[in-house]
Image (cartoon, rainbow, N blue to C red; front, side):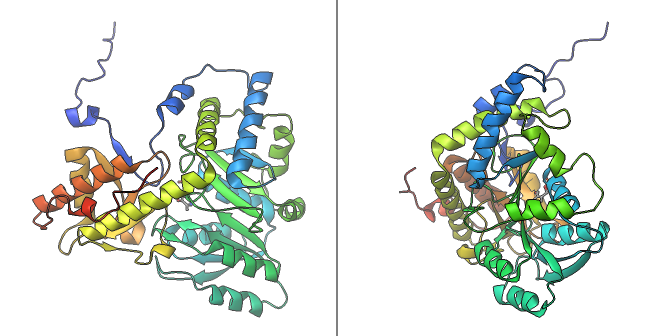
Amino acid sequence: MPAIPVVVENRSLSELRPQLLMLPGPTPLPQAVLQALSGPMINHRGPAFAELFAEIEKGLSWAFQTEHRVLMLTGSGTTGMEASLLNLFSPGDKVLAVSNGSFGERWGDMAAVYGLEVERLVYDWGKPIQTQDLRSKLQADKAQTIKAVLIIHNETSTGVLNPLQEMAAIVREHGALVIVDAISSLTSTPLPMDAWGLDVVLGASQKGFMVPPGLAFVALSAKAWEVHAKARLPRFSLDFSLTREYAEQGWTPWTPPIPLFYGLKVALQMMQAEGLEQIQARHLHLMQTVRAGLKGMGLELMIPDERQASRAVTPVYPPPGLDADDIRKSLLEEYNIVLGGGQRKLTGQIFRVGHLGYQHLPNIWATLIALEQTLKKRGYPVPAGISIAATDPDYEY
Ligand SMILES: Cc1ncc(COP(=O)(O)O)c(C=O)c1O
């Protein structure tokens, strides 16, 4: 008989302590969501699932601020990005990919893989997009060969929030589709899909929705649906028409990750109880607190101007002479606090404090104080509590 495994065997105390997940996704999960995830398996072609599906669809349209149906695809955010290319274009179509970080670059690369002609508007990582450049590019396209502009709303790799509303207005004047990766901005940041005239908006479950990874969300405007009808790139499991056809019956075309639907239902109820404006205000305040605290410690933020700063994540440079990944490692080992690292060319150069989803002030305070301690131990002088003293303690939720 094999021995029954003892869960705590070979695990350090720090592993068993609750972890503070300060990432821009996956984010911590509310207890009610965790409980919901353990619901029973049901028939995904039965009435109970259809009822669950319909309630979630309504909740998602609320979160996207759209009257359109929000499709749910099994997969991560990248699945949604890929699906939007497959469903909206034909081989050789031209798109303009705007980038100021890793995700923007990757989306352009992905479009090229599928045989699209990719024009780029590229900025150094973390540098703000100049809307005048976008206007000039599109005005130069007199024959309207650019079919769509790919925009990352919140560039999670560099913590820069792009001026989406203004960009969308410029793209609409030209006539191209406005396709938005809102994967790390949805719910935390104002993003009224219909009011801003966005054609495609993408989200992912593990970000501002407080559920585990595994679902991608995609909403399309009426114009995007028309373009989809003519798009000829090959696709099968990610086909939007098929997904919509099944959604009309309360189902997904393929077997869905049923536990995520249980969790999402509860998470959306929690979000609706809090209110979209309040969620956004909470994230704004968390971002302001993190920024003030880090600056209070004397650290340099990657995005100096708060108006261009992400409400999901704050990237920061380590003090001179210290390595960003070393700092992250000690926070993990000594306090069980997880921070994001720099991606690709920023590896080791920055660390990123996530403040997205199920987050509140005490988590931020704990992170700031632990960071103070870590830096002090590494010879960087930080008077105790200076970061918290730099934040606004009078804020009321
Ligand atoms: C802006 C943005 N786009 C795309 C992705 C990719 O999402 P996923 O890792 O869920 O595929 C992420 C993930 O962090 C993101 O933040």
